[in-house]
Length: 419
Ligand code: ATP
Ligand code: MG
Image (cartoon, rainbow, N blue to C red; front, top):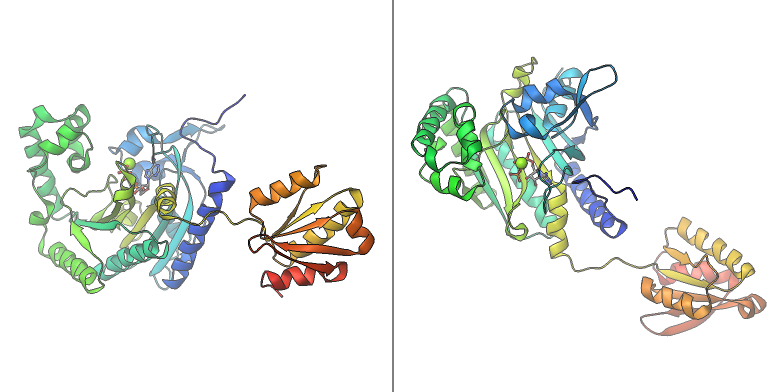
């Protein structure tokens, strides 16, 4: 039997309801905060990611699903959404008139990482991007919006970690200091970090290998290298978060694995997830658009890890799947025809009604109604067909009433509150 590919999984019915609920909450949030949806292709030219994410990142070096299509053009299953949102914004000149835009998108991403709990090769993200504002206030609003999302989902135990990555003016000196420091502690670093220390030394700060973490404990801190503009920007960002009542901690090791980030950087972590504790990450990427050959427009945004969010919400969730509002146990061909008519009419009215389509006996059907946790049941057999009356039973209250055929739909609608 053919199985799914490693790292690719199915979201089964029991769980998909939760995914849907979270997505609905996110969409309502985006409407409240003035974001518009943009829907993007999953496949892009490889060059888009190579140029935007950076040749020396893990993603581009070894995680992308890249292949030549039939004509030999190199294409990639997107590993993240920001590059595509920026491409679309530039391609359709969404900056014409007013460059300020708030966009969101929801969908699958693909990275060939080592699969483990909380880490898949196809995973889902909820992305928000704001173009055309360099103000730290919009960064603060994004973090506020994330904390609002978590509180609306009933998720507690999250914390916002923040940092600044500086800009092309002040970051080179910091990178040089990091590379020099890494040279001093080289003997304690993993092979990846040793290789990375010259070309992408920022990555050494978020290496998860314990010996690297220990070796980097006394590493230089970007915040002491910030130029006056970046320093003022970072101060305003943190002051706005404080004013908005968003608890936050400065994390000098918080860097982004993607090359295009500048200034404000943030991550939402949760204690509920163990090792894969980052449930959302984001920050400013003012230089990306120009680097891609477009206009010089500042940008900032975040990505929520949907799969991890589902895990967290599941941990905090107590309500089980609701069963049908009414289950009709129909016995015999004629009863089934009648039951089908009733459930279809009720479904049409927005009432969840269910019946048995097989040839099971009364006992088996009632067992099934019980298992489904139906709120009301109706038994429909030869005796009911003859009298044109059924018994409508409230399962939890163990009460019942007799209802003539002509009143069945109306009575159920009234009982479940949908007159
Ligand atoms: P991590 O440090 O966990 O590898 P990242 O820095 O690679 O995260 P981003 O590229 O910033 O992550 O993506 C934002 C969010 O997407 C992460 O915070 C995480 O919740 C989620 N995410 C990233 N990679 C995966 C994956 N392979 N499987 C599931 N979720 C993921
Ligand atoms: Mg990663």
